[in-house]
Image (cartoon, rainbow, N blue to C red):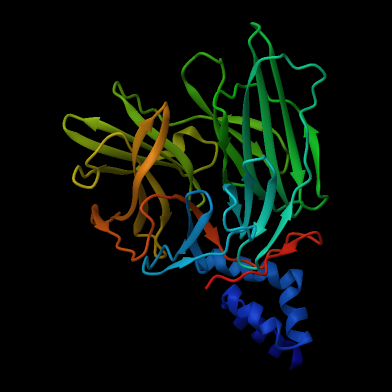
Length: 384
């Protein structure tokens, strides 16, 4: 009887928000012990992922203002505490996984944060392992953050490549940080080229992904994946969409699938094609989910149109549209907005959210109780 009541209690607690669970922890030692139990933490997270509850979008404005939006209802926006407790500290989000955020500041210090429990940790620093780098070189650094369910470990990947002025000079190295061991270790070097200064990968199918180059000057990018279990790299083939026109593209994960979006002009109209890979690693499984022609929703070009998430019942896709301008060779967001695309009716619906910032970066987030480790710091300040 007691076991039955405990199971019923756990079933009810799994349906609650993290905020409510943290309040219950203060009620008694028994509640605190139950909610802090690793088994319950995983059960609560699994329930949130399966039922698509406790999901939100985190918006980052001006590098240090953070907001949370209920992405399915789109009706509420909440100002968040700064993930590190310092309201004016500029940070970028490297990745989001199971309620944890990987963050980096202007000094290249890396942090892990759980905004729901308001705890964060500074990761140990790691240097490039090279004896005598050239005096002048360009540096590319790619990051990715995800979870390996086999080892039950959260991992952060950092790839660094130095391009010297001397013809033929190249230094590459890859390292993995393990939350379980709280240390970095070097892994096998990679055999592709990182051209851009800094890129953040996306997580799909327990692997991290980036767009890279095989030959450095081919002009054609390739999708590479890093398996978090085997810690091996592999190339994945993209769909056959040959466009003889200028287009912008974005590739990320949506609903557990790899999702590729191409935005281009066709006559006087802006067209958005969305592809998803139904079976991971299989080129033939790419399908075109959406071909969207709505010029009045995308009045200017270039603009970046990015699908973010499926609705709770799966019949709509939420898009973020970023209108961009170029200044001193760098692209900036002028304005961002959300729209829903109805998959069955093939129509677009505006999303009106009161108090939303004009421009922002957006990241998918699920609230969780996932702990960092014993070195975590508690953020004490509360938002008004």
